[in-house]
Length: 309
Image (cartoon, rainbow, N blue to C red; front, side, top):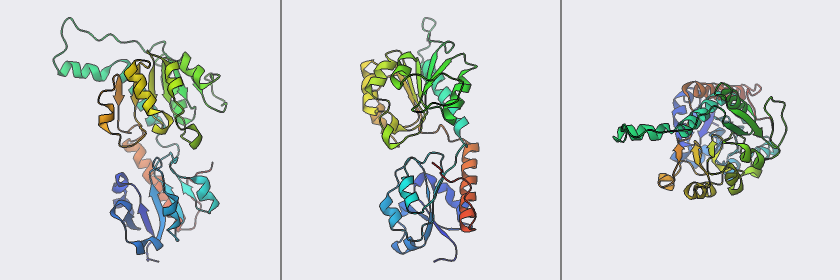
C-alpha cells in the first residue's frame, strides 16, 4: 500500500476535484489509464452517478473500500451488487433539488413563453411592427409531475405562485398535498405540461413512451430534468417532428453529451446540457459531502451520507 490512500476519479468532467483531493490522497484519473500496479492500492472510486459503473472494474481493485458518488443520483451504480460484497456507496442527497426545480421552471417558461425564439427573432432583425409572438399564459396551466420526491415537491411549490394547477403520479402514494393521478397515462391526458422528476431505475427505462407522449398531445410540453433513460428519445423525436407532441424542454439525454446533429431538425425544443443541478452552491455542497465521506472512511468513522435504499 502507498503511504497515503489512493483514489480513482472515473469521469473526465470530475477532473477539477483533483485539486481538492491531492493534498490528502494519491489521485488517479481513469481516462489517463492509471498503471496496472496502481489498481492494488486504490481504496475509493469517485464517480458521477448517472454513468454506468462497470462491476468488472470494481473486481479488479482488491483494496477498494468505497464508491463515493459525487452527485445525488446514483442510478449508474448497482447498489445491491455492491452491498452484497460489503462495499458501501455514498452520494450527495438533498443538495441540489431546489436548483433542479428552479431549472425546471426556467425550462417551462423558456418553452411556453418562447423566450429563446424571441431572442433569436430580435437578433436576426425579425422583430417588426407587424410581428409579435403570442404565447399561452402559465396561469391556469395544468402541470403534471412524474415523481414526487424532493425535486417533484420543489417544482410543485414553485408552480403555486405561478397559478398552475398541480397533479402528480408515482408508483407509490405519498403524503403530500397535491392529488395523485390514477396512472401515468391519466396524468399525461390531463396535463398541459408534464415534468419528469422521478428517480431512474432499471424497471422504468423508457417510462415516457409513445403512448404517454400521445396522451400529452399536440399542445403539450414535456420537460425532463431527471434522467434521459426515463424518456424513449426516439419516440420523442418522432412525436415532435410529426406534431403529435407540442414541445419538449430537456436537460438530460439518453447519451451524454448528446449529439447536436440528433436535434438539428427537431422543432419546438429548448435544450440545456445537463446543468439543472450544477450551481456554485450545489457543487460546493457535493464537494463538502465527498470530502467528509472520504475523511470518515479513512478515519474508520461512520460514513456521512451512505445510500440507504
